[in-house]
Length: 438
Image (cartoon, rainbow, N blue to C red; front, side, top):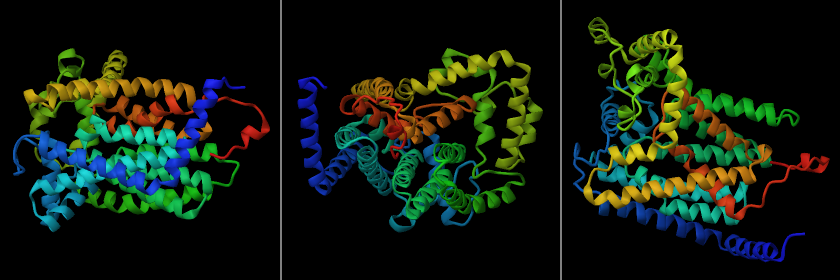
C-alpha cells in the first residue's frame, strides 16, 4: 500500500495527465511558440553584432566552415570533405531560397530547436508518462544549453533533432512493430549519420542492442530494413567522398584529424583543457617539418589516414599515457559547460548568462543520474543506454566537449523529470513482468 500522501500525489498526476492529453494539440502549440519566441529573442535580442558574413556571431571557426561548404555546394565545387554533408546541404538550400545573409539560417535553427522541445514531450509521453513529458519539455524551452546551441551555425542543432526523431520511431517500432516506423527510424538514423559521421558507430550499437533485446520476437526483418535504409542513404556519399579523396572515407574525413588532435602529449596539461579539447595539427610537436611538408599536397582523406597512423604510433610507444588521456577526456566531456563558457561567450554582459548555463546544466545532470538510478529499466529504456554508451566510447577514442554532449541533453532532461514524476522501477521476477512490452 502506498502512503496516503503518495496516493494523493499520484491522483493529482493522473488528473493532470488527463487534462494535457485532452488538450495535447494546444499544449504542443504553446510549447513550440514559447520555445521559438525565446530562441529568437536570444538570437536577435541578446547577441551583439549584425548578421553580415564574418562578424563575431560566428562563434567558432566551424560555423564559418559550414557556411563555406554550403557556398561550395551552390557552385558545384564541393571540397570540404572534412565535414559530413547533410548540414552544409541544408544551409545551401536556405541560401538558395533566402540568400546568404545568416539571419535566415538563425531563424531556421531556432525553429529546429523549437521542434526539439516538442519531440522531448512526445518521447517522454511514450516512454515515461505525460507528467514527465510536460516537465521535460517545459524545462527544455528555457534550458540554456539548448537555447545557446540553437543560435550557432553548427551541425548539432540539426543532429539533436534527427537523433530524437530516430529515437521516437525506434520506441514506436518497439511498441507497435509497424513497418512504417521501421522505415522512418532508418531514414532519420541515416540522415543523422550524414550530419555527424560518428553516429554510424551508435547505429551499429543500436542494431545489435535491438537484436539482443528482441531476438525471441522475430525482430530481425526490422533490423535488416533499418540497416538497408541507412546504407542506401550513406553509402553513395561515402563512395563519392572516397573517390575524391583517393582513400576510404566513411562520410567525412575528419576522423584522423580529430584523433590526432586529441591523442598527443600536449593535451595532458590542465592549461590545455581550460582552452579546448583538441589541437590543430600544426600546434602539436608530433609533426616534423618533413611531415608538414608532406601533408600539403594531401586530400582530406589522405591527411586523415596519415594522422591516424602518426597518433597511433605515439600511443603504442606511450601506453602508460592512455589512462590519463581517458580520464581527461571524460572530465572534459562531463564538465564541458565550464570550457564552453570560458571560450564562446566573451561579452561582459554575458556573465550572468554563463553562470545560469552552468547551474542549469549541473542541476539537470545530477537529477539525470538520480532519475536513471531510480527508474531505469533495460527492457524499457535500452535505446537511451545505447546512445549514452556509444557517445562515451566515441569520447574515449576522440574527445568530448559541450557540442558532443548536446545530443544527450534530451535524455538528461527526461530522466531528470522521471526523478520527480516516474514511480521507482521494481525488478519483478514474474513471468507476467517478463512479457511487458517495451
